[in-house]
Length: 357
Image (cartoon, rainbow, N blue to C red; front, side, top):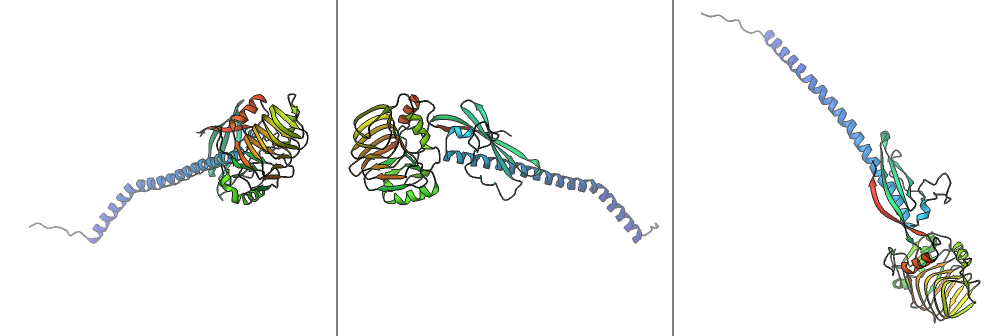
């Protein structure tokens, strides 16, 4: 007969404790690894998030710069910095017209936009984005100097513009030459002037067409008209015309020293009026018209202009009571640039975008 000792409760507890200790010893490294991995994942997630935020900040800066450039697409403004004076300390900063918008409320997420010259006719707009933990990212757009550019079919530079319309005149910012993007039919220098112009053109909106809705009015504080008048008036090839013009005006630089009244006339090139321009009959012109005073198209007038009209500060009156058409035309503008190189602003053309980080 075989005898056996019963297993006591104490023995069972001892065996269970040993098993638990063995399992804890086996699982402890796994637990430590899991904790370490979770911590590494958290750190990596933070770094990835910071990198993504820096990328978005850089993109935001570049988009803000390109949007600003689209409002004033003149290549030379990229070369002189915010103070518009070449050769000064801020030349490498992008010349924002207004303070650019922040990326977010988080001040650690920000951007800085700078200009890096590429060659004589191209620059890079470079946007550096920043986020927490010294995260950075850089993107850039290549911008080349394009053809001659003017801000609209009509550009009125006065801070306050008075517009009267009661005829059948059509003004179009759609490029008749087919090269440039649509421009405003009427470009003005301030938001207040634009609001007033839109109100004055409400009933005639269908005849003022181009970019920016109907009526086509845009804010383009691009240039001072008076220096253009001075430069062309002082050209050695300039021809003086009388205060009353009729018949063939000719081609080239045509200058009226004061106000000019036109009965029926035609010409091409650059017409400079150092006073008011009044058209009582038919005027056909191809090229650039620069008027430092008021522009007055009488009820019986018919105006055909291919190119652009620039109005100086003057009295800011634009009276369009007759018929005809004024069309932005890059071909006519290019003809002026070809004859007088360097006199007109050149368009800034974005040709590519790339990620530098």
